[in-house]
Image (cartoon, rainbow, N blue to C red; front, side, top):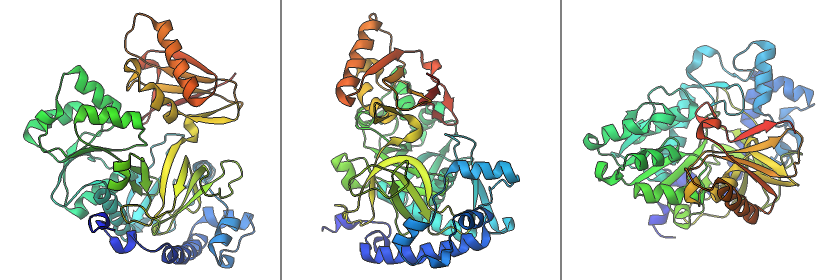
Length: 443
């Protein structure tokens, strides 16, 4: 292992042997179970209904076998039932909170959650690791959305900037219209890194205005975004911006930061490192909620091991991924996940789950649909016979020929019957700060 490969923000934690990591996780799991059972009406009632005595959890196996999972809809339902804005998950007096944030609301009404002063220190640690891992260093200049900090992930990113000594050049929070501000600031505020909002919109703006980013940002080292990128997306972004495109994640709900290390970037593996000393990571079968075996796809389920205020325990995230627990070439020992996509943005076609990211990876190989908006149509009754895809496109003379070409490419790659519809960009709506990548319809 070279010294370069061991370059980490916190080597003692990030390269911890997995045996020690498991011992630490069990200790923190027990502590969090006691904490939520004592202080949260949501968890106390949930565990009572399941016949669970948290004191009886003695091992990781016990935790996975006996502690019930939770999801966003349960918290939303508890909010509606009780009128408590935290849905019964707040574990400290509200006076102890230093900030309250909300989720994006991609799949429904946003949840809210808060942090204490102690929580904030752990959040700073977690996001500093993420920023360091993706390439930031002290003194860097970073053009970043962060003025309002309305979202938990944004709060974490900004806290990591300040903790590491990264200088933020804050641009407006309008995800769908931030590029004019970026390039207006460019000639006078040369930066090392730029967050892109939605990458496809940055490409569109650059192309429509005939811009060469390096003329505006000569010292730019990389662009980055908290999004599940595809290989096609990365290729186009890097060709347009002329620098590496790095991906981070993962959620604002529990201030969860993940990142792609240098080694994974070099392999173009699109894998995310998770801080397992701060979050217990599981992949579960989407229907049975049982842990999946090695090398199997599963739904991401997280347990917050550090939060005082609103820790979620066995929280199903709706994202489907593969796990790799082998030591990474960068020297980190924590699990890496490769994401397939979000269940809400997928459809079951003849027993095969197809994700919008898989469709994007095919369509964005074609000039006519590069960085165009796309949307899956999922019937309420699953599975469905065909994969139905709606996509915007550049003007062409032969729309019928384009439809056939794209449908054939999708069918060849995904091995399912395909029906493709060409639509105007305005016909694919936005939801919050994201495009609505899947729409549910009756048959």
